[in-house]
Length: 101
Image (tube, rainbow, N blue to C red; front, side):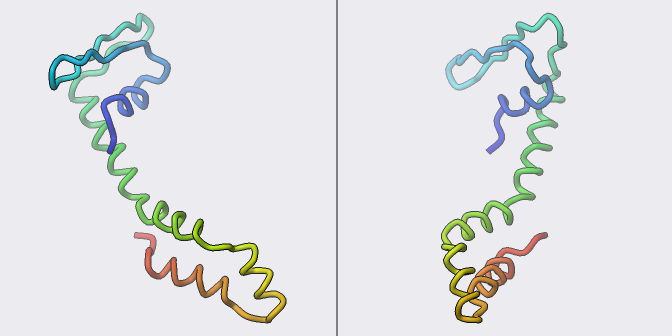
């Protein structure tokens, strides 16, 4: 989940600020004299934008997790030695199960 901190870092890289925890609400304390404080709307819009980017990459994160479970080097070696397509078949199955949008 994209946070207020993510949005602030994206909008104002290297800016100086803190978040004070007041009960259930975080209060932004702007301490940067070089960059102007973003508005609440700018921050909200950036959270939405960053979340959309993150969500659009779900397929890639899921594929990576599946690829990491494979012993790909050994599969490729065995395929070369045995004239099989086990590795290609496994990769293809992951791509079919988790297609790009």
